[in-house]
Length: 314
Ligand SMILES: [Zn+2]
Ligand SMILES: [Zn+2]
Image (cartoon, rainbow, N blue to C red):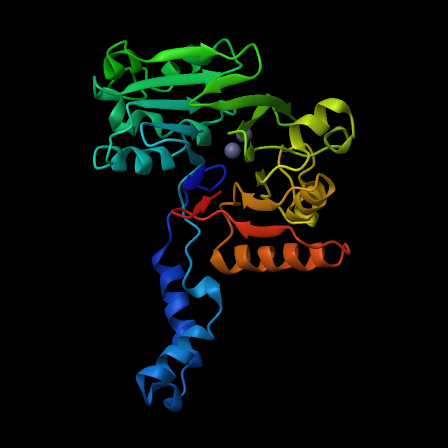
C-alpha cells in the first residue's frame, strides 16, 4: 500500500510567495561564515546543519491524497486543487490506471475545487467513479461547474461515463481492500475513510473537530481506529486557536497527538494545514507535537507533516 500526498492545505490554495522565498534565502545567507565555503565538504556540512523548514515546502494545494493498491487503479481521497497535480501524472504512468475511485469527505470547496481541472476524466479509456455517503453528491459536484461558474459542465466533461456511488453498506470492496467510513464532527458533516488491504490500515480524517465521543472506547470506535498503521488527521490549529475557534470544525495538533496515541496508531500525519502558516510555523508545530508526545510518557508513534509529493509505503 502506497500513500501519496497531492494537496495538504486547508480552506484555500496557498501558493508560496516571493517574500517567503526571499525570507528562506536571507536566513541561509545570514548564517554563512567564510569557513563554511572553504571546501565542498564544509559547504555540505553547513547545509546539513540548516533547519529542515528552509528546504521543505509543505505545499499550497488543497486536500487530495492517493492510496495505491495496484498499478491498474487509484483510490483518491478528496478533489481539492491537488487533484489537478495527480491528474497531470496519469497519462505518463505505466500502466495508465484504468479505474480511478474518488471519495469525497464532504463538499466544502477546498475538497472539490480540483475536479473542473481533472484532465483524466475526458479519456474514454479511464473509468472514474465518485463515492460519498451523501445522496446529493452528483448535484453538489455539478453545481460548481454550472454557468456562470465554469465554462464546461460536469456532464459535458465526462461524457456521461462516470459513476456516482452513494455509499450505504460497509465495507465497500475495491482491489482486494475494504473501505469503511465514519461521520466526524464538522459544520455540515464530514466523513472519514478507512482503507484496509488485509495487512495494513490507513485512516483519512480531514476536517474533524475531535470530541469526547471520538475517544470513547465503544466497539465501533475500537473497530475503526484502534491499531491503525496511519492516520491522516486534521491538525489545522494550535491548542489556543482550537479554543478560540471552537465549533469551526478543525482540531489542534496537540489533540491529534492525544487522539492517535490513545488509539495506539503507529503513524500520525498532521494534515489540512492552516493557510496562514508558512513552512517555519508548520515545522514548529511538528516539533511541538513531537515534544508533547514524548512528554505523555509514550513512545513508538511516528509523527510527520503532510507535504505535497511525499510518499509513505507499507
Ligand atoms: Zn477543508
Ligand atoms: Zn470543511
